[in-house]
Length: 492
Image (cartoon, rainbow, N blue to C red):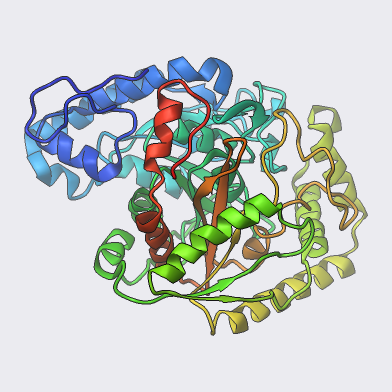
């Protein structure tokens, strides 16, 4: 599976799989001409063709434009050499964009029959910045309708399946991005995260899912509930930092967008990784459901590796009650406000959320917003004592493909649709940064995610902690089984 290097360039190793190279390696190989962007993109498209019949990670594939963009990248590198990467750090590298994000001239369905033929006439900032950075857009990845659930299924295409076990789902709602990246289909997928939609599928698919601070990457059109973040799915923390550097920064179209970090993330990782002890708060549970014991053990093992390397790890209990009822109120009212009344065209599960939103009073919504502010204040005080909080990303394993939620959801509010992922949504409500990195594999061969969350706007600290885990417990070799046709792997 997948094209491999067969040339005689000075940098590339013979036999390397072109679909699994990282950003830094691709840039080096492109520069010394041992690999061309066209070779890379064709290898990725070949991988996609092999996997997509069962994986269902894309809704729309932009094959011809991707190859044309790769040829243009090759021309720029031939003409300018390494200077071509100065303003285009992702030049010639294949990426994907979740199908909730508009793309000029390229169909954007939002996973909905209502938008099945919509072709936007504009690019939001995130897509503009990818194009400006020279990235090659492969197409639009699968999502639940409007991203409403923590799964990736809709009525347009089959559900995205888990790369490690095809009977199971990939999580969601950015499951198409996570599954495709795990399979070597692009260096990165850009997703959205309103309650865990980047980190859940990252944990289920064994990749890195980074949700920066709210507003760090502009979200256009703006999200009415102020919970949704743009995030990234990659195979390494280094690639997450590289894509984050491209996407971060203010834009006037998003009034909540933030200035860039004082230093680039890639530069910050290079300068600070391993040079400073981290203060890590280990959180066994964020509430119900209780974390599966095997998942808790694997996440704790990853944290223990930090302690063994000299970082400070302490057990901690979260100083707030489960904020799920507030999340439910805020999300349901936003969905109801956005809905145009064509109930028959809507996924039944999403319609249930919309109908709930129609019953919620302004007083109840104001109370939920107040609880949200109190949660952020509690986290602010807690993060004065720690650099990051660590916990299992999701307390359960992947569930069957095609389901919008686990078969036995945990009732907390009036609807249980996101109640099973209590460690992810607090960091949407607070806007604090969080990342999921692979922690290991359970006895069934399924990946388990470790979530690291940081303080207010401490994006670089979160990336630095994730990089420390990656350096101590590298997981890249685990992709060998997937990319050679298997369905299981174990990085240990």
